[in-house]
Each structure stands twice: as C-alpha cells, then as structure tokens.
Image 1 (cartoon, rainbow, N blue to C red):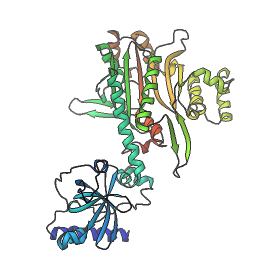
Image 2 (cartoon, rainbow, N blue to C red):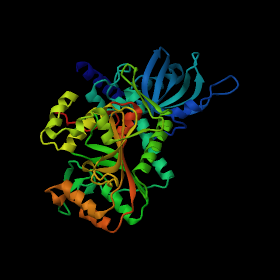
Image 3 (tube, one colour):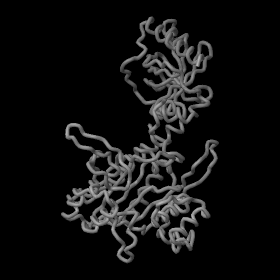
Length: 488
C-alpha cells in the first residue's frame, strides 16, 4: 500500500505541474480523422515519393519504450492498438517538458503521419500531441492483467483495459444482440416494449423483486417475464412480435444465475413449437457463423487448451423428455416417491424433502441429462405440470407441446405451442397458484377471453447464449456489471 500511495502522490504532482505549464490535464474536444482500427486499415506508409497518411488519433497510452531521445508508445482505444513514435528533439524543450509528465493510462490526442518501422510495425510519427485526460492511478500490470476475481467484476473497466479476451467477449455479446434484432426484423417480427414494473408477477414461476409506487400508493413487482403482455399483443393483432430486455428474479446467484438477466421472447401467430424450434436452430447457427465464423465452438481453459468443442452443425437432435429419462435409467418412472428418493444418491444427486413426484423427475433430468448434454438437444413433450402456459399434446394429455433447448449443459431456450384456451389456462394458473389465488393475472385472462390465435413462442437467455458462443464458464463473465455484495 505504501508503494501505491507513493505512485498516487507522484501522479498528482505531475497533474499540478501540467497546470503550472498552462496545460489543462483534462482536455476538451479533440477531432480525429480515424479510429485506431480505421487508421490501421487505411494505413499508407511514407516513401521518398509520397508522404504517409496524415492522421489525428486519440486513445490511452498503454506502453512506453524509452530509447533516450526517441520514444515508442502504444496508443489504444476500442480494443485496437497502434505504435507511436515521438522524437523529443523534434518536439522541442517546451513540448518535451509536457511529454515527460505523461504516464501510462493517460489519454492523449496525436497529429502525425503513418510509417513502417524497420521491423515492419505500423506506426505513427507524432508531430504534436494534446493531453486529454490524466490518469491518477496506475493501470494493472501489462503481463498479469486483472486476475483477482473480485476486482475483475467490481472494477470491470480495469478488466477491459488489461484483458483483451474480456473485451472480445463483450464485443461478441454486442454483435449477438444486434444479430438477433436483425434476424427477427428481416423475418417480419416487430420489436416492442412491455412494462418492467407489473402489478402481478406472471409469466413464469419465480420469486419476484418487490417495490412500491408512492404516487399511486400500490405495490409493484419487477417483472420475471414479459410473456403475458406480449400475448396481449397477439390478441390485439400483432402476428409476429418480440422483446429483448431485462427480467428480474429474486433468487440465488450462481455460475449460471444472476438476479438481473437479459431475455429474448418472441411470439408467432399460427405457428407451433416445432416451427419455433426450426426458427431457433436457424437463429443460433446464423449467430455462430456471423459472430464466431464457425459452427464448431471451442471452449478453452486459462492455459489456452481446448476443454470441449460444441458442434452446432445441423440437424440438431430432438428427443422426448420421458424417452431421455427411460434411456438414462429404465426403472426410474416405475419407482414410488420413496423409491425415487432412495435411488437418487445411487445416481449421484439428492432430492429435497417435500418434492412432488414430477419435481423429483425434473431434478433427475437436470442433473443426469441436461448438465451432461454439450451439443444441441431439443427436449420435447415435457410434463404439463412444468409448463402451465403451453398447449396440451392431443395424443397424450400428460405432456405439453414444448421444447427445451439444451446446449453446453444448460437450458438455453424454451419454446411452446402457446395455450390459447382461456378456460384451460385459468384452471392451470389456479392449480399453480394454490392458495395464492390473488396472484393470478385476471387482466391477462380477460384478454385471452377475447380470443388469441394459436401461436408459437420462444424465450432465449442472452447471457447463457453468450456464455456458449464466447466460451465463458460463468454468467458473470458475460455481464458487464454483475451483481455483487456491497463492500464491507
């Protein structure tokens, strides 16, 4: 800490000296001709016959190699880097005095021209520079980056500066979200916004966050899903609709769960779960090819070694829920409740007291099938107790026409043939609510009674999708600012 304190003092002294020299250490507007990436693409070196490309660039100083009167520095911005060459002899004594007060982490703007060094490095010969922002704290060490997990998540900006791999993950996430919008809009889907504060938390079985609206004097919930509002739009005549936004669930935090997360939900009138599965398969393959350039997604460890490869080549496997259970343990379905409870430890997992029979089987599925499925798997015809908003299968009333898309050991997306019978829907919601009958969304049921067309619907977890495509093993690695306990 003493060493850090001394560094902070030195930098503040430099800040004061810049002001003594008439330099504003936190500069104003600086017009650039190119981004650093654009300059590297448009690069034209200087020759005896032709001057190099003139550029005005801005960025952060991230490296400095002092050769006496010659200095080579790295200027970085937006994940791109270019080398600067500065001759203090050319700058003159006044500008050199300012230059000597710069530190790694400072932002500067430069005027110069492009040239190639003897080693072929694309560089900018700096004629003049402008101080744009003084960094009062040192950056993480270049070769070690940000390795402390607490710092990585709490001070994400340091992670982005020091760890290029982290920056690439978030650049991929941005491309994924943009790609989803473009893909759906090209197919006639309309993007809408629905309330994030709702009087009844509906659309999924989850613990909501509660809040209070002072002016209206009512308690509200942060939404756990946008589903019931999007279906109102199907009633109102929107045939293809989607929303990309936040959901909130007041539940546990883990490698796969964050209380605030991003979801896509889309609904397509006159479609069904099979048509939505085809849409989902096409969408994810499109994203993999455009964002990653391949359908073979490699996940690597810290040493850069491939730990697994996810094969997204089509067609993707489809299998019924109960068939998968039967294949994994042929005797499971016939066991009594107590038999299942006794059998679970033999299979490597525990069942909690009070679980109903279908919940035990779902736990079996999650531990022994879902978590072990790496390549895409559409799990279809799920028990109706698990999905109260989906349409019953005509041939087997104990299951509903849905899919759960599992990739990389976790559910990425569910898809339904949506239930549009208001009488059956009320009965399902009442069964789910139990004694908490007041939690039923009567406004949604009222809308359904006016007639909703048959439709297919999908949900897609953007965080989990990004984890899969970017090779991240924790949801916190794909959320810029994941939720953390306050310090102290």
